[in-house]
Amino acid sequence: MEHRPTAERLGYINLMREIEDFLYAEADLLDERQFEKWLDLLTDDIRYWMPMRKNLEFQRRDQDITGDRDIAWIDDDKTTLVKRVKQIMTGIHWAEEPLSRVSHLISNIRLAGQIDEATYLVKSHFIVHRNRLETETDFIAGRREDVLRRANGEFKIASRKIIIDQTVLLAKNLTFFL
Image (cartoon, rainbow, N blue to C red; front, top):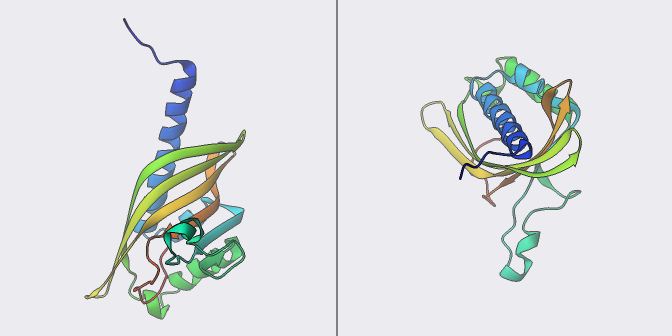
């Protein structure tokens, strides 16, 4: 008996491929240090947020990140992200001169929900490796919750919540993007 995928299933597969391609292309832009092009992937109202992790007992495990209005490693809007990129691109930013070598590995991409006709909640996991100078090496692992919004036929990142596995960052700075 032959099984043919339904139009609904094919639509889902096409959407997932488009989302995956978008996230992989974003990683390439960051790895290739094309930060200004990366900014074009962000909506003007983006929230780029990395709350802090906490070590809590089992009963409170669902509270192991800082809250929406609490302290965070990063809590940027588009204006701040543009300023961060401009600072890096000056060539005199002490923490990024010379520029770090960074690799983003993105996996476990999953469509977690549809917010409206053009907006999707997408979850993924990542490992980011950064090497700077001769001896500085950092690994950051975690997961992301992205809100992707279609604008003029293209996806844009409207929100990114970055949840890292570490409670203590050993990296000297957070001048790279996750």
